[in-house]
Amino acid sequence: MYKFEQNSTPLYIQLYEQIKDEIKTKLKAGTKLTSIRKLSNEYNLSKTTIQTAYNQLYAEGYIESKKIVAILYVKIF
Image (cartoon, rainbow, N blue to C red; front, top):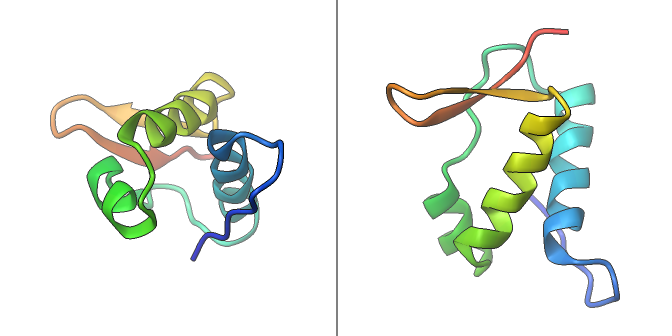
């Protein structure tokens, strides 16, 4: 469960940091991440906000994308 504060930190950064922490502490390699649509509905966030957070995780090598089914996985470290 993610928590968002109403402060000057953009929502995508808050989400990015929480998912990154989960990857480092709880998730195992190969774990499927929650879909953008589901997160959007669950937390009332725009799909763009979630996609931006996922893009940052991808750019830093925390996740990888399997294009065939458009699912994001936690990368092996």
